[in-house]
Length: 73
Image 1: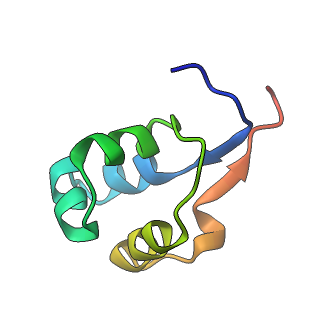
Image 2: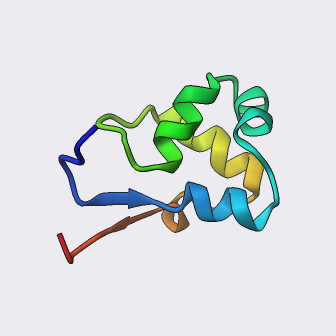
């Protein structure tokens, strides 16, 4: 899926730092493994606020740490 925006998330970094996997995150957050994979690989177009809030709560990190703008694009 081609990327259509410059907004990136650090979910993959958080998953790697926590030594977690997509399945664990999917089960904890209540979304599919495929959805976690797409979010982690920045292959998303829309943001579901409750999903991001649950992800941030799971990792105990603020929402502001999750997203950044990739100005190189």
